[in-house]
Amino acid sequence: MRRIVQRKSVRSILLVLAVMAAVLAPQAPAHAAWGTQTPLNYTLAVSGGNPYQLLTYVDGNWIQWDTGGEKVRLSINHCRQSSYVIPDIKVFINGTYKGTLYGPSSGCKTHTPTYDFGSHIDTVKLTNTGSSFSYYPWTGEFIHTYHSRSGTWVNPY
Image (cartoon, rainbow, N blue to C red; front, side, top):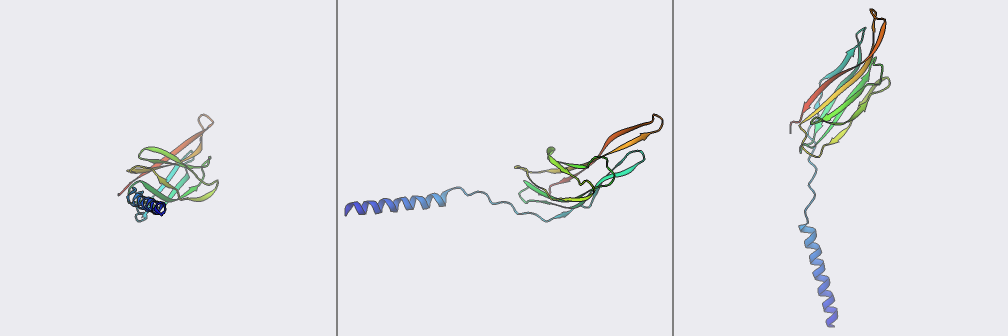
């Protein structure tokens, strides 16, 4: 009989310890809420060449920051006009290169990336790049040239 009481006591103690461990264990921080979607009222157009022409452009939809300041997501339209190569958008967060978004082979494409930087995001910079061939009649040459244009957005949180 004494053994049964000891087993029940040990079980009770273990149960109390398990409950205390669950209650006292550090909780993972909750994800900060997403802030409002801020319209990106801009056109990041890239022009160049001889003759001068529109190569590619980025039309903004919105940018959204999390209220903790460590994440950002975008919705942007990326269009190819007359760029010789498929245009691309390079993404920089706090000056650090985070990746390339490739444009369509023709027409427009919508990108909706989300970036988790892991520390506070101060700025997001997008660099849109396209290319052209320019004809120089005085030399008779066609020269392939890359053209870029950038825009930077500041985190409000």
